[in-house]
Amino acid sequence: MSGSLNKVTLIGNLGRDPDIRATQNGDKIVQLSIATSDRWKDRNSGEPRERTEWHRVVIFNEPLGKIAEQYLKKGSTVYIEGQLQTRKWTDQQSGQEKFTTEIVLQRFKGELTLLGSRSDNQIPNEYNKVETTQTDTVTTSNIASDLDDEIPF
Image (cartoon, rainbow, N blue to C red; front, side, top):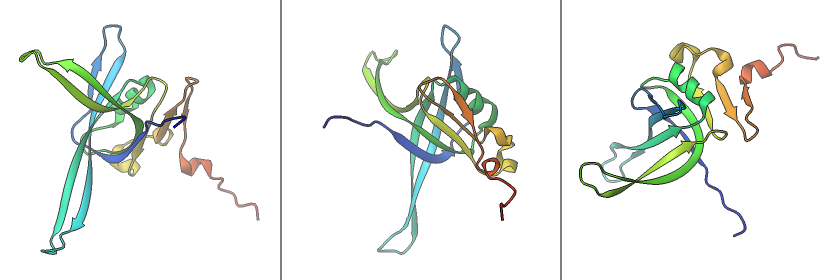
């Protein structure tokens, strides 16, 4: 294979308020816990079933981190795009090496879209979608504002 792709896309709900921390040089790191659920009907009993999967998300991207800090709260519905990363660390108490797999939104990569109505999240329209790219530009857009109100015919 000549190339590879590491991309994760999720739509889910926050299980708790964002956890905001700062590095020694003052950069913010935002951690999210996002739940996604599968629902189906059991073949044998006919009863509805549900399975919830929890995802650890870490935002190193400052513009996205600011939006998450200001507007996200427990229960918020979000769409995110990031990369899967596994890191190794040593448990302070037991001294054992442990591994954690997370979805990471890097400094100039990633996407965070706040879903739901404005009344649900109290989010201004200009912050409905924020993307960053390798060129360190930040763009905001709202699908409704992209449509022209006047019909040309």
